[in-house]
Image 1 (cartoon, rainbow, N blue to C red):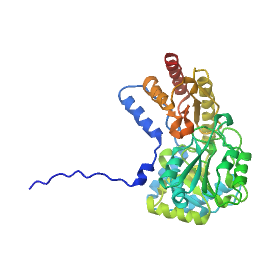
Image 2 (cartoon, rainbow, N blue to C red):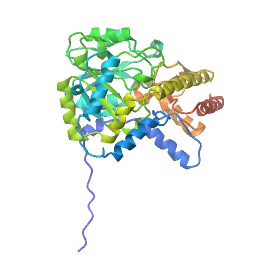
Image 3 (tube, one colour):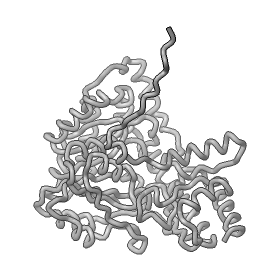
Image 4 (cartoon, rainbow, N blue to C red):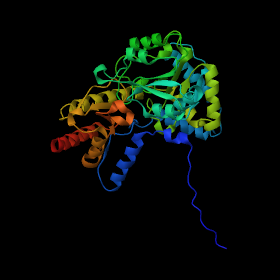
Length: 397
């Protein structure tokens, strides 16, 4: 007897409607589709270094695989890597960090997600930079928190206005997110600004998620962490990792540093979600930190050089202007002179000029009037992209 096929409606949990996305991957998919049609596309949309992972790190991973590092490890990370990270953070941030305060996770995003899950109740307020990494706002909304944007403005070199931050802190504020050097603007918070943020928080029970994933890609001066401010270590969750510093995006390995009681809770979330980070990649992570750092310096210098050249070219194109970023590998270009909406211009440059970039609105409401270009591409391709943009502008503006 034949059975009738029944189409069952998919009913999602209401919280899924609050979940955002990372538009870079959507634009990458559209760009790849155009390439399959035979179009030439210059990729300036995706935020990952175009350099290969340094060979010493790759060899360490190969050796680890051959040595049998292919099994489960502790949810918080291998003790050897946690010890290495604790030493690194102690040295670079000037604070005493123990391995028990380190949690290794597959990529940087889990620290953002787990922090929200562990700390943010329904209605609790989280202050976050806007324009900023889109996952901040997405995760705040997903867990039921109240997202409170603090605008990053070009006239301030995209540094946070600390006085404005002070005006946003109230008795519902549970978490403040800092990101320096910053995605998408390349802005940097000075030591004085960070110390003022700490002073504004005072003795409040407010945590800081300090996203320092680009800290080794700051072009001038030494990066400074709010974790280094006296009295702030116990209220700081430091997010860092291997993806940007060592060109290890596909390896999926990041870490959080935080007080031990919170680290235990973040570890529980790791146990319930990923079990652990891949063991052989963690062995490679030890080599990344302890091994030759020359490739990091070379990559940083290359990104700075590319930024300078690309900014110079953009500033000679009608309707476009850009500041020199102070870190990371992005140029956040002002396109208000074109008269075009950011999303519309993103689409036009992709489809008509063959240049993939991201609308500033992909990073929040205060990104309107901007496009983000990743300089994680060759100098030759960057100059070709600028030529294409200029040719498009001459036809359309």
